[in-house]
Length: 298
Image (cartoon, rainbow, N blue to C red; front, side, top):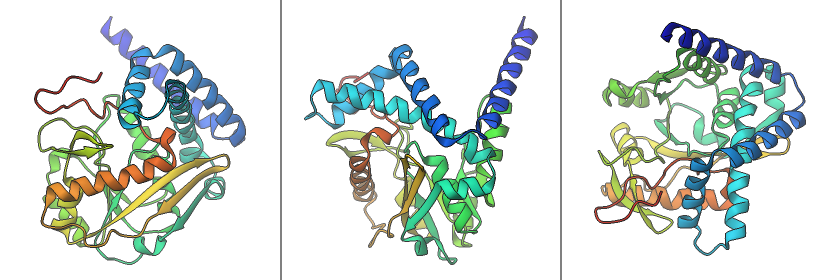
């Protein structure tokens, strides 16, 4: 039975990838409409994850009434589904289409040249659009830390998509810090996505929307060890594609206080989220790790 299940899994996976390749050729409006419908379906059927989103929003926005929390929860699922289907054209559509749909603006000069740089790339739904937008217009080799997917076909598909527009070098978590620091010092920007709950190991508790939140202090650590500036990049989904904004490098960062630096990162992230709250990755259990004695929020 196991070989049969594996065969069925490969068939479904290949079918899904073929579907995404075909979807890439459809008008953006139709892709977004399909994503909206998928988001409604997920909201209705995936109750456990719906409760996670609601719990996150209620913790972070306690002042909002219940109907507004419900609206933001539904909108989160819609944006999540639309962004997932958008990977079809980001990874498979003609390059000219992608260039037309993804704009890059703001302090783009911060990403040019060879100065050691760590890019703070928070988990907004437009994450892959941000990658593509920068790679298309700033042809500079870069690096990131990647966790292998359990499905090898999906893993290869994701890697191929994310490497489509540039020379992206991937490090596994088992590779350690030294090769990453070496890459930063040689002028290869590191894309870092530290705004997830990676468990109690190596995390510190700092405020995130006033809630003590387990946060890895890796952003300040890599910037300090690599002698690098930190440049935030945030993508916003728009009706015509994505707007990828490069923010100015943080001044006087990092300091010698890793706790204060990590709290500062969360504070800045709050500001980015407040401009587009439904586009943040609330489906993640951001508050899964709790300080001793504090109750489970999920």
